[in-house]
Amino acid sequence: MNILDVFAINKTHSQRTWFKKTSHPILKNITFSLAPGECIAIVGKSGSGKSTLANIVLGIESATSGEMVFRGEKLTKSYYKQKRNEIQGVFQNSYASLNPLQKVADILKEPLKNFDLPSNRNELLYLLDTVGLEPSLLQRYPAELSGGQQQRLAIARAIATKPSMLILDEVTSSLDLVLQKKILLLLQQLQEEKQLSLLFITHDIQVARFIASQILVLNQGEVIEQLSKHQQPCHSLAKQLFQSALPSHPSKRY
Image (cartoon, rainbow, N blue to C red):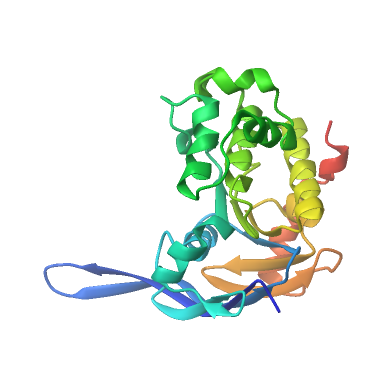
């Protein structure tokens, strides 16, 4: 059984003026499946609908039509509330997602308390160790952390509830290349150790090929091609996107 099945998701933005109502399609008939422990990358230019898709899977936005099935059950608003601990997201701007008035310890405790999970010091230290952060950071505020540390903290908070699936929206795009590689390796390690399923949103083809087994190419809200990490694209727009990638592989970016 797949962990996530997405069937014919459409998203339309409607705008009403004095004279008429206009509709603008953002996502068109998006369909794909994510297996347990698999990583699928969604790539495309800015404005192609990648982040909207991420928000819909996370339940932050609603689709205009279509449905999603998580572990064999249709994802409804009530089901999202039941399974919120299993579906977690990490975003590009980690600092904006962290409460600047909370210390690291309190940031990690919050999701644990929300789901009645142990929030003792040993659990917090375990989460920090899992993402490669020092115990001394527990009493620091987000502003006192580097960009890479903030992103690791965001990942630690996301995995605190022991999720089955992570939605990662441009989580490496604001990091330098060395930190980018470290975060990608960390995610691969977590994927393997915890059998996490990853939906990885990115505009970087090389990052997609580094971390994902399957790649979906979006253009103007449509999936124009789905291919494995080793395949070359056939669609002309997908070729254009792939050819614009940096020549170096993330593992060689030093």
